[in-house]
Image (cartoon, rainbow over all chains, first blue to last red; front, top):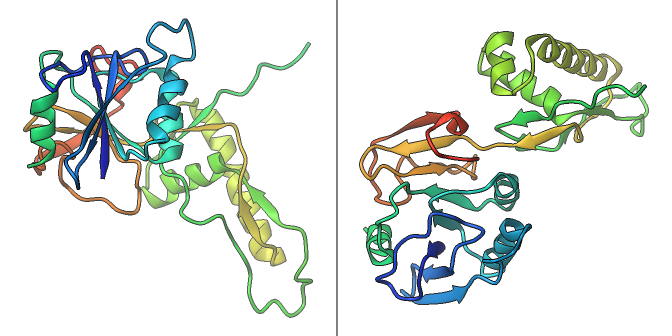
Length: 105
Length: 147
């Protein structure tokens, strides 16, 4: 199963980005192979439509869960219809590495 | 003057099937027109007659007023009764709605998560695999979460 995590940087030391649509990087983590992929978010500076564009990007990677700090109003119904699970962590100091370790428990 | 547009109705559990067909109806034409039951009508029926909520509680779940809920509910019953009596098929589709899945919180790691798969559900947190989860209720009221 693949999981998308929003990240502030492109290393596993980076912290969880609290925004979904305008995060700096998406981390695509594959739970079966343990592969980690960093994708820069093209919609980071977008004035509008960043959220739906981000959904399209992560959905094209076949992720089934998204971990972030917050999801905007346009995103929810989109992800519901795509059957992608949203996980909210209200902790800006959480590192990507810690989240991956938690997922592997 | 045009009427005020309908308020969107919140659907938390979409139906697992898309309709019903009558069987062994000897007297009635198989190709008779179908009854179109709207999603919001299905949802009122689910809340009022399956979860056994009263109209006030059900209206809060669907984010509409109590009289509106009663109106949708009576229309749902009328349609179903007509389908039963006339032997018509029921197709569930359409309506002014938005989907909203139910939210849960994990007491162990403090995360919030929703459940997009209605039919397959395990009682474990998707993050830490802990089983101490509880329903988060209406998450839009929680501090700092914009959903």
